[in-house]
Image 1 (cartoon, rainbow, N blue to C red):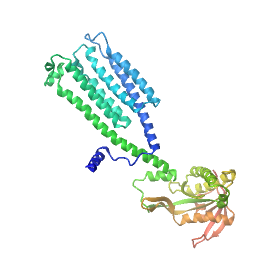
Image 2: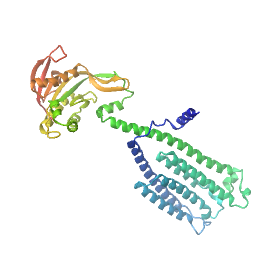
Image 3: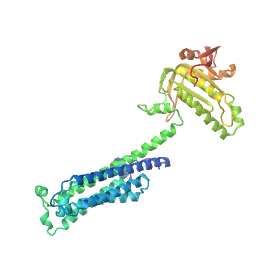
Image 4: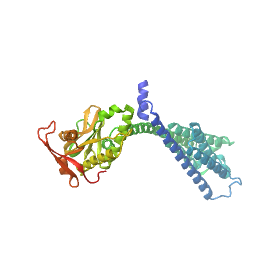
Length: 448
């Protein structure tokens, strides 16, 4: 029985969010609710202006009473709306205050309708045909902006009870009630007679609209919670991977599967801090972590400036791709600009407690696979292939040749003019049978 009820609730209201929402998710929801309450206040203020305008331009009749209650009711409603809007802007509207506001909204609207028979000197049943009743649907719908079904339900019940009270007052106040009740629709429309079925229809319409809106709001609230939670999680997780990679994953037409990859000609840049193990021995783990954060922040700026995407952090090392995640026709030149920009950064500044870093870079261009690798639900978005391995070997070769930026012949050919290359020679890179012609990169345009 319990499972059946849970299934029914899920079918009507949607899937319930798993667990309790984290505090930061709840804070976002609360902030949205506050903004919604402000929006509701402004709409109600606009309605007060509309009510006042309609009353001001409505033609007066000879039957109107000397005392005009409508302006007083409108003035009170206007003052109440302004006070409520001020409280909403200051964020001082607790749940009980919102409930009181809903009750006053409906009371003032019903009171405005009730004054019609006094204003026009007609029997009380006169106001049962007032089209002003339609505004209750606006007040009920306004509460849907809060994405809390209880406020929609409160508004609908207040409206239904208010109309029942007006109906009771209209018929109970007459001495010959049966003479006012009719089943003739024409007589109902053309006289002050009451068609009970029509009044029941109005009440049922109010309750049914309330129920539908409440269900829609409850479903929407669950979706909102899941969407906000997913958005917060995605934003947090995007800090652990490159924004370019996060955007590519989010924009995928279908879930990315392990082993799926795209073969493309691209350039990769490997970086590593010279003597990092020795540096690590001299400082505490906390200081070392702060130094690396400072260092990676500086490098990330120049990488982003030249259209690179950080694919991996590994200790003090970086793997950066060009034309891997984001299309870049000038990928080889941008990789070299980044490497030279890194050299300028480490020459001009220190990190942590005044320590200087020296960064070795290896750059290679060629065909490689870009995509996801891993198993099951745990994937890594990366680029792999023999050309990637060459870039890693070039970074290590800097130690042997006293250089800090080494590039392959393919990178030199693809980079174009403007860079200063110095041939190191044909070197057999570890893991390859064929020798690779290697160049030191001593300068170039826009080092950044």
